[in-house]
Length: 332
Ligand code: SF4
Ligand code: SF4
Ligand code: FES
Image (tube, rainbow, N blue to C red; front, side, top):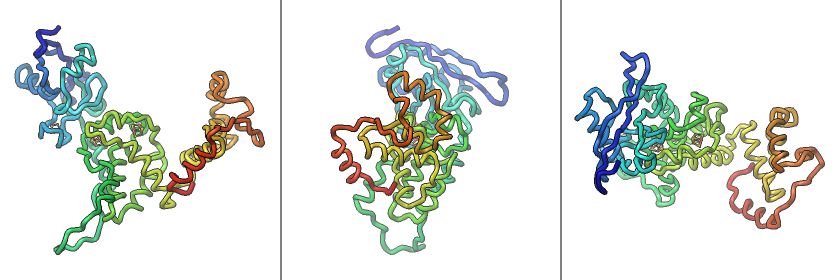
């Protein structure tokens, strides 16, 4: 219900749970007047200061710097001190629920246990590893190019929004996750750093490293600093090939198969990629999907068979081959 252009009276719902006293979480409603400049953090402050002093959440800087106030609103990760409330109310038809980043990690209301986040961060050595003079007489300068290569990865405020939005991490708690991988890139690309190889080895490991990212882009959507962690994960893929660290496994062979297919046809040969990366035996795991793709006309029943090459070639194949040649930085 709108009062006027400036203010509207709405019912805000909030997830409530105290791990020490509650058996189950519950949702509580609060009547609030929301102004056009109000941030989600202003609503949380008003709930605490005017309605219920026990409502708990983290915040510190109020300027999008400390990373403390990451929460979800209707499942959408937001930084409470950066997100305009009216914008969200418009998006969700005036029906919003404030939620913690991860319900299974809740300590109290919006406050979650971020232990897994910090542990994973620490694993990638998120600092420049270098032998520096204890009393240097001059700065260690970096060129503009070296700085640009960071690709804004250094802007991360460790809010955890991407980490707790990542479906791979939800399914596999061992996966390092987008924030830690972003940090791994940030310091591995730094010209002053001496631990790139160590980080690349760690992040190439199956089950925990970059190859377990399913490229869903949820992390890019979730990041309040527009860092785009998936871009850094892709850079780490390339660096692993460049350093000769990438292990030969299904995931890396899938990347190889992709380039092989584009070079050969200018199109993606879906069946060949599966055979190339998983072999003929592995292919049987995907028969159900293959059948659906056949029905949809995406593959032919002879695709993937040896000595049968019925995938059409792009009329721009030579252009595509040239583009691959000039843009490929690693040896697949
Ligand atoms: S793109 Fe990768 S790292 Fe990012 S959220 Fe999806 S699975 Fe996680
Ligand atoms: S990459 Fe973005 S979303 Fe992820 S922790 Fe850093 S600032 Fe937050
Ligand atoms: S309070 Fe510091 S980022 Fe929001």
